[in-house]
Image (cartoon, rainbow, N blue to C red; front, side, top):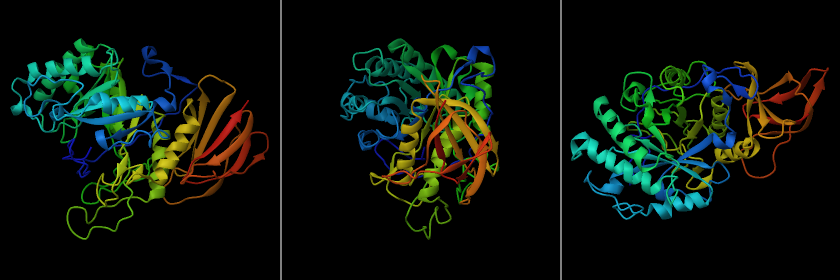
Length: 453
């Protein structure tokens, strides 16, 4: 999340360290093994996998219903307690007057599940009256008042910090342990998550996952942030999700491996990833004069392919960054699905993905040929006769090619390409080649084939 973003700021400016994207596993049928029999289970349905990052009073719940049911909100600790860490919150009211019952209640009524990401950026370790005592008391009140066991049932999950780089490891562990202990007492059903971590030494925008080692009884989820950044400052250039040059999957897979070795029952959520796409001219001076974004079309293609690629990993959820932007040519300032609350091509593409695959889960990766083609098969949640195959060109240069694919077992009822706008969808023609293959044109916008046995 952008450096300097507070609950009273919509500015999305931030420098990031070099980040990650994912190498891919070939998966066999719907159940898959996660480093041992204890974690053998089904993949999540795509409707339970795809989420977006949002920001309190700026979020318009009705507008974004076509793209997800999972929202992650940046929730300010300072909103709830002001500048007194030992203030006793009067939930559902924040100290600044925001009514969480009205805000999160409206989201819940619209069908969303809310992940509350607590922001401690304005309350650094020296500012706490008593960090351990106050954090535990706050965690207890928050969970008791907003958690899924209470009368309000407003929040499903809480992350203890976003990217608390200004907390040293000892201070963050004290904050995490104390707040989580309070949350467990306040509502044992509330999912408790770490801040953004890597399985590497702590940095400006992440903590070493080892800071929560040994606290297994107090949390349920490990959070990771990863962006497909090909170059650091001053360009912050991002590439297509399958680019073999990226360090996009490696860090995520390292956290998954750490989880398997140290906390096997925990979920792992990728809570930030995305691309910036603006229509504004390049800045001529300042920090962002060499910044490089992507086009609207590329953002749409890369987001959809990002979700599809991430589905191959042992992740339980992924949240894209960001819901809305003001069309600014800088880092994290044009990452929205909407631009000034008007849908961008990425909105339509993600809505199509969500509607098409919402009731499906990844069964297997059929083909993965770098620079040529990727084909995935998704199985319907309850009807074994139904599946959807998705095929695309894993490139970033506008590549189109006629290609032959393994023929899906059954009848192809229809095929359509990922949309970039509202309205009629582009039907895709295919031809049978022999008994085992079909031929069709693929490009960087995935093609969906509905199959019935």
